Image 1 (cartoon, rainbow, N blue to C red):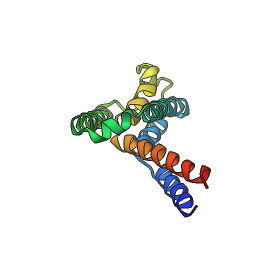
Image 2: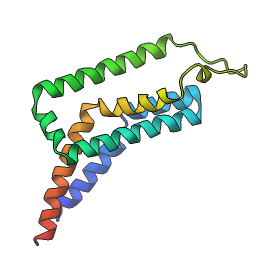
Image 3: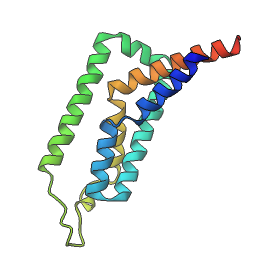
Image 4: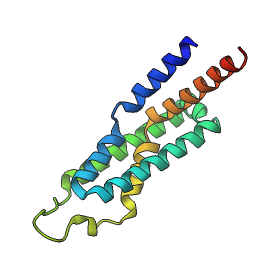
Amino acid sequence: MDHYYLFVITTLLIALTPGADTVLVTKNTLVQGKGVGFKTVGGVCAGITIHIAIALLGLSAIIANSVLFFKIIKYAGSAFLILMGIFTLFSKKPNLTSDTTTSEKTPKGSYFLQGMFSNVLNPKAIIFFMSFFLNLSYLTSILYYR
């Protein structure tokens, strides 16, 4: 039972630690508004759902143990974040005094996809969900067989 409390505390601390998803949601919300922030959060949630499915199917263990797969995801995630940074640096700043904003020029689904790809291509999330479900199954078996 001592391990259960340590597991819960560690999981909460990791979940509360801000990462790339938090930065992306904050940036999109501050620059484009609350509606775009919600779309980005929806994409992040879709990415989390994909990670859960991958972990439950056992594919995250294969990805984490395969150097090639893990490097591909790590470099794809890095390239995605670098491209997002470049696009942000060179994007036209919204004019707060006019009625038109840059959100009219950007496709509505792109913010959802930004959030989803930011989460899916995050290697830390793969390792987190794999270890979370492995530890959860271990703790469940300990509590069940006591």
